[in-house]
Length: 261
Image (cartoon, rainbow, N blue to C red; front, side):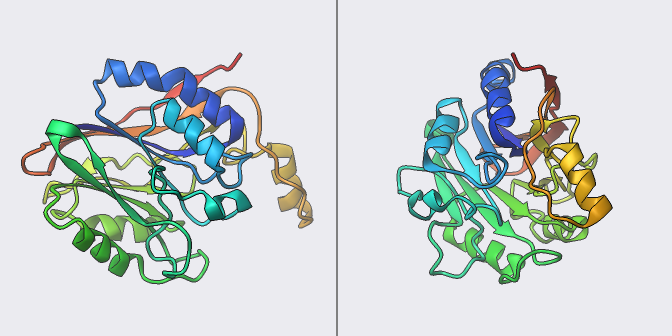
Protein backbone atom coordinates (compact mmCIF):
# COMPACT_ATOMS: atom_id res chain seq x y z
CA UNK A 1 0.00 0.00 0.00
CA UNK A 2 1.23 3.48 -0.87
CA UNK A 3 0.18 6.39 1.35
CA UNK A 4 0.71 10.08 0.68
CA UNK A 5 0.54 12.40 3.70
CA UNK A 6 0.18 16.07 2.75
CA UNK A 7 1.19 18.97 5.00
CA UNK A 8 -1.13 21.68 6.32
CA UNK A 9 -3.12 23.16 3.42
CA UNK A 10 -3.04 26.98 3.68
CA UNK A 11 -6.05 28.85 2.31
CA UNK A 12 -7.03 29.20 -1.33
CA UNK A 13 -3.44 28.98 -2.70
CA UNK A 14 -2.99 25.64 -0.93
CA UNK A 15 -6.29 24.30 -2.23
CA UNK A 16 -5.47 25.37 -5.78
CA UNK A 17 -2.05 23.70 -5.56
CA UNK A 18 -3.72 20.46 -4.42
CA UNK A 19 -6.11 20.68 -7.37
CA UNK A 20 -3.21 21.15 -9.77
CA UNK A 21 -0.80 18.52 -8.42
CA UNK A 22 -2.63 15.76 -6.59
CA UNK A 23 -4.35 13.99 -9.52
CA UNK A 24 -0.98 13.75 -11.30
CA UNK A 25 0.81 12.48 -8.18
CA UNK A 26 -1.84 9.83 -7.54
CA UNK A 27 -1.35 8.48 -11.06
CA UNK A 28 2.44 8.76 -11.14
CA UNK A 29 3.04 6.94 -7.84
CA UNK A 30 -0.03 4.66 -7.82
CA UNK A 31 -1.10 6.11 -4.47
CA UNK A 32 -3.76 4.14 -2.61
CA UNK A 33 -4.57 6.59 0.18
CA UNK A 34 -4.15 10.35 0.61
CA UNK A 35 -4.30 11.96 4.04
CA UNK A 36 -3.93 15.74 4.48
CA UNK A 37 -4.11 18.18 7.35
CA UNK A 38 -6.91 20.64 6.57
CA UNK A 39 -7.09 22.85 9.67
CA UNK A 40 -5.82 25.95 7.80
CA UNK A 41 -7.67 25.42 4.53
CA UNK A 42 -10.28 28.16 5.11
CA UNK A 43 -8.47 31.46 4.65
CA UNK A 44 -5.53 30.15 6.66
CA UNK A 45 -7.62 29.59 9.79
CA UNK A 46 -9.86 26.57 10.25
CA UNK A 47 -11.95 24.47 7.90
CA UNK A 48 -15.53 24.53 6.65
CA UNK A 49 -17.71 21.60 5.53
CA UNK A 50 -17.87 22.98 1.98
CA UNK A 51 -14.10 23.34 1.70
CA UNK A 52 -13.67 19.85 3.12
CA UNK A 53 -16.02 18.44 0.50
CA UNK A 54 -14.11 20.31 -2.22
CA UNK A 55 -10.83 18.78 -0.99
CA UNK A 56 -12.35 15.30 -1.01
CA UNK A 57 -13.43 15.86 -4.62
CA UNK A 58 -9.79 16.63 -5.52
CA UNK A 59 -8.57 13.21 -4.35
CA UNK A 60 -7.93 13.60 -0.63
CA UNK A 61 -9.40 10.64 1.24
CA UNK A 62 -9.11 11.70 4.89
CA UNK A 63 -8.57 15.11 6.53
CA UNK A 64 -6.83 15.47 9.87
CA UNK A 65 -6.62 18.68 11.87
CA UNK A 66 -5.44 20.31 15.10
CA UNK A 67 -5.95 23.32 17.34
CA UNK A 68 -7.34 25.52 14.53
CA UNK A 69 -10.17 23.14 13.60
CA UNK A 70 -12.63 25.26 15.61
CA UNK A 71 -11.71 28.61 14.00
CA UNK A 72 -14.69 28.49 11.64
CA UNK A 73 -17.96 28.02 13.51
CA UNK A 74 -19.47 25.99 10.67
CA UNK A 75 -17.24 23.09 11.70
CA UNK A 76 -19.07 22.72 14.99
CA UNK A 77 -21.69 20.89 12.92
CA UNK A 78 -19.43 19.74 10.11
CA UNK A 79 -18.41 16.30 11.38
CA UNK A 80 -21.27 14.32 9.89
CA UNK A 81 -20.57 10.61 9.55
CA UNK A 82 -20.14 10.74 5.79
CA UNK A 83 -17.18 13.14 6.10
CA UNK A 84 -13.85 11.50 7.01
CA UNK A 85 -12.63 14.51 9.03
CA UNK A 86 -10.70 14.03 12.27
CA UNK A 87 -10.02 16.31 15.21
CA UNK A 88 -7.40 15.44 17.84
CA UNK A 89 -8.58 12.47 19.90
CA UNK A 90 -7.27 13.97 23.14
CA UNK A 91 -9.84 16.78 23.17
CA UNK A 92 -12.51 16.30 25.87
CA UNK A 93 -15.22 13.81 24.95
CA UNK A 94 -17.85 16.57 24.65
CA UNK A 95 -16.06 18.16 21.69
CA UNK A 96 -17.70 17.58 18.29
CA UNK A 97 -16.17 15.07 15.93
CA UNK A 98 -13.91 12.07 16.33
CA UNK A 99 -10.22 11.38 16.64
CA UNK A 100 -9.93 8.18 14.60
CA UNK A 101 -11.45 6.65 11.50
CA UNK A 102 -11.17 3.35 9.63
CA UNK A 103 -10.91 3.83 5.88
CA UNK A 104 -11.87 0.92 3.61
CA UNK A 105 -9.31 0.16 0.88
CA UNK A 106 -11.25 -2.80 -0.49
CA UNK A 107 -9.08 -5.87 -1.05
CA UNK A 108 -6.15 -4.17 0.72
CA UNK A 109 -8.20 -3.99 3.89
CA UNK A 110 -8.99 -1.34 6.47
CA UNK A 111 -6.68 1.50 7.40
CA UNK A 112 -6.88 3.09 10.83
CA UNK A 113 -6.13 6.83 10.79
CA UNK A 114 -5.71 8.61 14.13
CA UNK A 115 -5.17 12.24 15.10
CA UNK A 116 -3.69 13.56 18.37
CA UNK A 117 -2.42 16.94 19.51
CA UNK A 118 0.73 17.73 21.46
CA UNK A 119 0.94 19.42 24.84
CA UNK A 120 4.20 21.41 24.68
CA UNK A 121 3.63 25.08 23.71
CA UNK A 122 0.04 24.21 22.79
CA UNK A 123 -3.37 24.81 24.41
CA UNK A 124 -3.93 22.64 27.52
CA UNK A 125 -5.16 19.18 26.56
CA UNK A 126 -4.91 15.56 27.68
CA UNK A 127 -1.83 13.43 27.00
CA UNK A 128 -1.34 12.63 23.28
CA UNK A 129 0.47 9.43 24.27
CA UNK A 130 -2.49 8.06 26.19
CA UNK A 131 -4.76 9.24 23.36
CA UNK A 132 -2.62 7.38 20.81
CA UNK A 133 -2.92 4.21 22.88
CA UNK A 134 -6.70 4.64 22.90
CA UNK A 135 -6.78 5.14 19.13
CA UNK A 136 -4.84 1.91 18.61
CA UNK A 137 -7.19 0.04 20.97
CA UNK A 138 -10.14 1.29 18.90
CA UNK A 139 -8.51 -0.14 15.81
CA UNK A 140 -7.55 -3.48 17.34
CA UNK A 141 -7.06 -6.05 14.58
CA UNK A 142 -6.31 -3.41 11.94
CA UNK A 143 -2.72 -3.86 10.75
CA UNK A 144 -2.49 -0.67 8.67
CA UNK A 145 -2.28 2.25 11.11
CA UNK A 146 -1.48 5.93 10.55
CA UNK A 147 -1.22 8.75 13.07
CA UNK A 148 -1.01 12.54 12.68
CA UNK A 149 0.56 14.15 15.75
CA UNK A 150 -0.23 17.84 15.52
CA UNK A 151 2.37 19.46 17.74
CA UNK A 152 4.75 22.38 18.09
CA UNK A 153 7.72 20.65 19.71
CA UNK A 154 9.87 18.45 17.50
CA UNK A 155 10.98 16.50 20.57
CA UNK A 156 7.39 15.57 21.40
CA UNK A 157 6.75 14.37 17.86
CA UNK A 158 9.94 12.30 17.74
CA UNK A 159 9.08 10.81 21.13
CA UNK A 160 5.69 9.78 19.73
CA UNK A 161 7.39 8.08 16.80
CA UNK A 162 9.53 5.99 19.14
CA UNK A 163 6.57 5.31 21.42
CA UNK A 164 4.57 3.86 18.52
CA UNK A 165 7.45 2.10 16.74
CA UNK A 166 6.28 -1.36 15.76
CA UNK A 167 2.67 -0.52 16.61
CA UNK A 168 1.93 2.00 13.88
CA UNK A 169 2.66 1.87 10.15
CA UNK A 170 3.27 5.60 9.64
CA UNK A 171 3.55 8.43 12.18
CA UNK A 172 3.78 11.96 10.80
CA UNK A 173 3.89 15.36 12.46
CA UNK A 174 2.04 18.51 11.42
CA UNK A 175 1.46 22.07 12.70
CA UNK A 176 4.73 23.99 12.19
CA UNK A 177 4.32 24.32 8.38
CA UNK A 178 8.09 23.71 8.08
CA UNK A 179 9.14 20.41 6.44
CA UNK A 180 11.71 18.35 8.31
CA UNK A 181 14.51 16.31 6.73
CA UNK A 182 14.23 13.33 9.08
CA UNK A 183 11.96 10.96 7.15
CA UNK A 184 13.11 7.47 8.14
CA UNK A 185 12.10 3.93 9.03
CA UNK A 186 12.35 3.11 12.73
CA UNK A 187 13.74 -0.31 13.75
CA UNK A 188 10.30 -1.75 14.50
CA UNK A 189 9.01 -0.93 11.00
CA UNK A 190 7.29 2.41 11.59
CA UNK A 191 7.76 5.15 8.98
CA UNK A 192 8.26 8.54 10.64
CA UNK A 193 8.71 12.22 9.84
CA UNK A 194 8.61 15.02 12.41
CA UNK A 195 6.75 17.49 10.18
CA UNK A 196 5.23 17.17 6.73
CA UNK A 197 5.44 20.93 6.08
CA UNK A 198 2.68 22.82 4.28
CA UNK A 199 0.93 23.41 1.00
CA UNK A 200 1.13 27.18 1.01
CA UNK A 201 2.88 30.23 -0.43
CA UNK A 202 6.66 29.81 -0.44
CA UNK A 203 7.60 33.48 0.01
CA UNK A 204 5.80 33.93 3.30
CA UNK A 205 6.07 33.37 7.03
CA UNK A 206 4.62 29.85 7.41
CA UNK A 207 2.01 30.69 4.77
CA UNK A 208 1.07 34.16 5.97
CA UNK A 209 1.89 37.49 4.31
CA UNK A 210 5.43 38.35 5.37
CA UNK A 211 4.83 42.09 5.85
CA UNK A 212 2.07 41.60 8.41
CA UNK A 213 4.18 38.97 10.16
CA UNK A 214 7.20 41.26 10.28
CA UNK A 215 5.14 44.11 11.73
CA UNK A 216 3.94 41.82 14.50
CA UNK A 217 7.51 40.91 15.40
CA UNK A 218 8.81 44.47 15.09
CA UNK A 219 6.05 46.29 16.94
CA UNK A 220 4.19 43.76 19.06
CA UNK A 221 0.96 45.06 17.56
CA UNK A 222 -1.42 42.26 16.44
CA UNK A 223 -1.60 43.10 12.73
CA UNK A 224 -4.16 40.95 11.00
CA UNK A 225 -2.70 37.92 9.28
CA UNK A 226 -3.64 37.11 5.70
CA UNK A 227 -2.57 34.28 3.44
CA UNK A 228 0.37 35.22 1.21
CA UNK A 229 0.42 34.96 -2.59
CA UNK A 230 2.84 33.67 -5.21
CA UNK A 231 4.56 30.34 -5.84
CA UNK A 232 3.19 27.56 -3.65
CA UNK A 233 5.33 24.89 -2.02
CA UNK A 234 3.66 21.49 -1.89
CA UNK A 235 5.14 19.45 0.95
CA UNK A 236 4.23 15.81 1.41
CA UNK A 237 5.73 12.48 2.42
CA UNK A 238 5.06 9.11 0.79
CA UNK A 239 5.29 5.81 2.64
CA UNK A 240 5.03 2.29 1.29
CA UNK A 241 3.54 -0.22 3.70
CA UNK A 242 3.33 -4.00 3.55
CA UNK A 243 -0.39 -4.77 3.67
CA UNK A 244 0.12 -8.14 5.39
CA UNK A 245 2.43 -7.09 8.22
CA UNK A 246 1.34 -3.46 8.48
CA UNK A 247 4.97 -2.37 8.67
CA UNK A 248 6.50 0.27 6.40
CA UNK A 249 9.09 -0.68 3.79
CA UNK A 250 10.02 2.77 2.45
CA UNK A 251 9.52 6.47 3.09
CA UNK A 252 10.50 9.54 1.09
CA UNK A 253 9.71 13.24 0.89
CA UNK A 254 7.64 14.29 -2.10
CA UNK A 255 8.00 18.06 -2.40
CA UNK A 256 7.02 20.23 -5.33
CA UNK A 257 6.61 23.90 -6.24
CA UNK A 258 3.77 25.16 -8.36
CA UNK A 259 2.94 28.49 -9.97
CA UNK A 260 -0.75 29.23 -9.94
CA UNK A 261 -2.56 30.91 -12.82
